Length: 91
Image: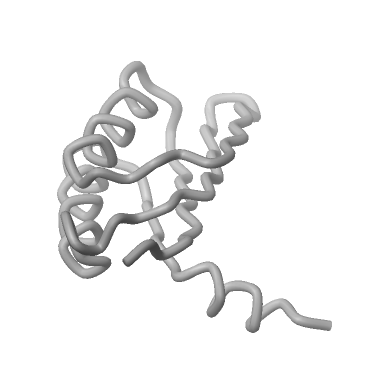
């Protein structure tokens, strides 16, 4: 089963943030559908829309793996199901 999700990342800019998160998503069998990143001064922000293959790696397992990345990289990473995200911001 494929699940569309939104990942947001914010923290102090440093080398390897995109690489580490991309490697985790690869390990989970996820596909990056869209990605945007910005650096404001020394603050790094990134938003991704990804497709998770929950037969390979569940949403919860992906979230746990990204939490480890968050800790090791010193950034905040949030993973949300896209349908929940869309509902939260519905006008």
